[in-house]
Length: 526
Image 1 (cartoon, rainbow, N blue to C red):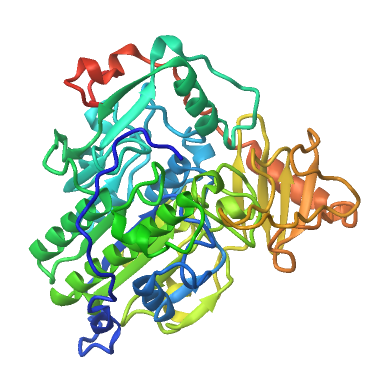
Image 2: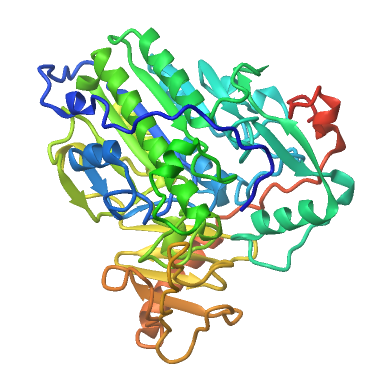
């Protein structure tokens, strides 16, 4: 288990459903079609398919379960395999291979979301929304112009980078002079593992990474991050005029490593043998409690009658850090379903004509941007990859999405989905198996028919074809049975591949060292 900072014990509290039943009860409010809805966009970090109560009843998520049951469960909701690329898609409606952000951002590299791509916060602000962000940014910070309050948000409480201690808010980063770049493995996964190994063997530097707007913030040191973010979200809601539209973006840092949670939540899972899994599960339950409190605050403010709430994750669960994606294959850092298909639902007491339903229609991270725009009454954005799914979500019409690209690395490896079929081009990532829940007996690993696969290595240049509708666990490669279909999907993939741009991967800069900025990872060095 990764433990780069001390673990602080917090006061034990009692798990409860809070008063969320009030928000789920039929409201006396009616939707005023002349008012754009409040949009609450909740993103978790590394939440696996098998890590929520409606997929796995061993995970205690009563608040999320209630919202999902009374909303629409999107069971074919897809994201990118890692953090930065997905957050890019959420904010811009663009695939990351079109915005130079195919890789996870490094703290010491001057990488950022280019200013030419407007964020959804900027667009909604133009429509009269108040826009607030609480949580993880991970889209650039080397100059203040790339930070949230310069990218459309009225306020920001959170951190700039990919992870940190959940109590001290300290982030470890690679020393500039001691790191070499490796290109020996696939782009889908090399960033996290290689950087982790390098800082462990060659040294690291540490700095705090927590801000209120662009001001360093130490008032929350020692406070569990999920609780700090929840308190800030509730504060925003309490101050909001309910007659003015609100966009509240809450990208929580949990259950991303380091695995840390107040002891009360871990104790709920004392029956689980693996400590990593116990802590991870506790982190998810703490998240559930947080969402319940946020919805209660919206209810108390009279905002739920005109609210559209989204819950999703940035990528699949990390199987080596307590997460689990069964029955899906693979996990974070891979193009398998376990890395890209995530628990997602939408909830509104008044806006969803098919509330209480489950949908298998395709939805991708790039679709939230145009969907939110249509919800706000804004004209459609031009030149983006996303498709508005507002009518699908609110009226039950068919989803306009019939295909999407899972990802395209700089070397051309990637995957595409067209209808029920998925074509993987080249190596899909570092983790290619079906991983058991930590602390349980190993899963009997399925094999590809015909011997074209082993659990560790895949042949270079091999194309794999799956029928995801019939085989969501990706157990059987059918490429040999349907060569014409492989050719058709390869033509589509090649067309997308020709549109990709080179990822922005500058060298590390010594000026990023937090020792030069009072111990904080700080803008101003690019």
